[in-house]
Length: 81
Length: 461
Image (tube, rainbow over all chains, first blue to last red; front, side, top):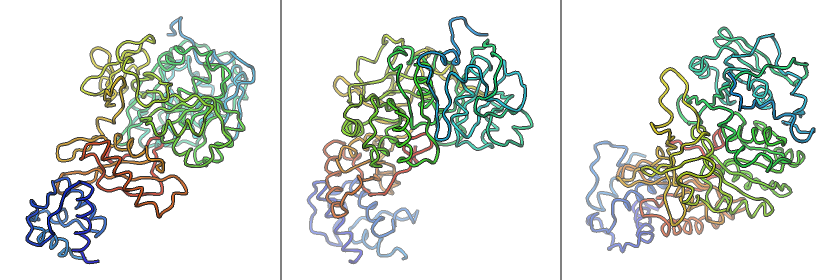
């Protein structure tokens, strides 16, 4: 499974748990429009760290938090293996 | 000097049946033998008025030393087994120790500064000791990090709850505890046995649960105490079958409904009580109705002379059972100006009952919203497949921290059911807790670490 697929799958799972209806997941979707609050993102980042072995937002201190879904996915794709 | 209305521990030895014993895995000592025999060896040191450290590897020897020294020494410091000599050195200084009673070879700093006495089974006939001191009992707090604090008790205060209940209530009891008797919870049980006219079966470090339970059964143990973590471990071990104590006591941690129900199921003929006590605050109360928390009417002054109030969420206790003071050069006051000890245990009123929600210092802060790990664990533990759990903080780049949970499932839980159980636990948490308190991640683990004091190890507390 690609990083992208894993992220989408984790987001859908959390959306279901949090009773959030996700819009269609596209790269240019603003994270604000996902319906996720900061707690939902905190859960997502924690679970992805367990699944992918990386948390790109803590590793790089100066990392700006992404604003679109595409940027969010790229942050994970760009983590050195 | 000895107040006329006080009694030293040795005066209780001859009361009750003549076959009373204290035993560990290797020896059984008749209490009546201790009246006229001494276990102290290696010197004719006059112990009257001495400040003594009791640092033995075996609990049996510690018990014998306590009985010999109470009423004789000025003070005795009870050293739990897991303390290294390096840290002990600082405590020896703080407590002004001049004599050490030990069953181990001793060299270095402490040995040079103090008289050292050995201790063995009570086989030497001893001249009647003069009981002329109200000996101070010094104990160490069970804090998880840094140097423990020394707190000072009197036998009167330590035995306050036992005397209040009427020692005759359990006069034929054979007591046991999963605690070490040099910790507050364990010492309470030793004192119950000695003062109440019963016997005592000690725990043994490193002993397997199966071997321990076999010994409890062989010793006819009828009354037994431990922390909820000790009890969960016993329930998990599958060795509880065939063991049928009449009285089960929990203390030292929050007794949640799940562990109370689990014990009621495993020991249908036992009465089950959970007590609130701490090294500093002494025994506050015990609750015998099988429900978690305690009735709200206990707040205020009760008939045992224990007074409780809740200030800023934390339970505060004033009574003669609280420790007298912290000991040491720069010791802080133990109680406030009115004599109340702040326990740091946070309680919440739900209906007509107060529930413990956690420690003040253990709060997890999730983007400014607070959660006690214990309140999350209480919900998780209610799932029938869960044996025990630990909620903890995990750092988060988004909210600063989030709650995650490590869960031990009951033995024989099918791995195929893990995902279903995970979903069920999450759904229960969502129903019972505010959104930020629901664990973000639930991990199934084989076991959870329990500290030497019998409490769930909390790295973030």
